[in-house]
Length: 128
Image (cartoon, rainbow, N blue to C red; front, top):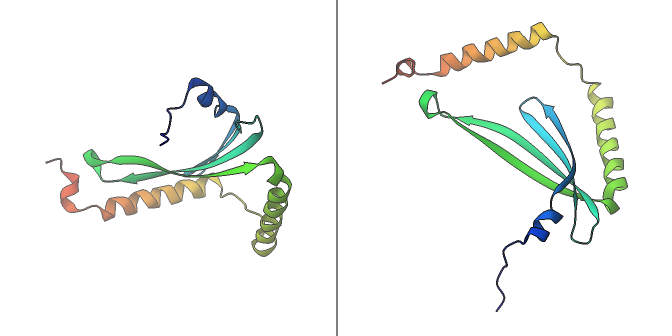
């Protein structure tokens, strides 16, 4: 019978991040991490981290929902080719993304804040 062995320091080092790039995009952060496999081949771990807030006031809880994919060097070219194709399709169909002006962003944030206050119950204003 074989049991799982705890990771030794050598095993842990093999999963260390060699290079990393964080991309902040609204409520999400994308992490592109270069790691080494056990046989010294590099691969890319892509992680999407999305902030989730639940509860209200004193019961407010912040969690992060994470999704990962691993991209190996033998797949880089096909992955990039596919990514460029689908991004090109979206741009042709819907045009380039133009970020809103600063004032528009602030207006939307204010509207969201007002809507959040409206959705709270009457007694939520009071700390009981």
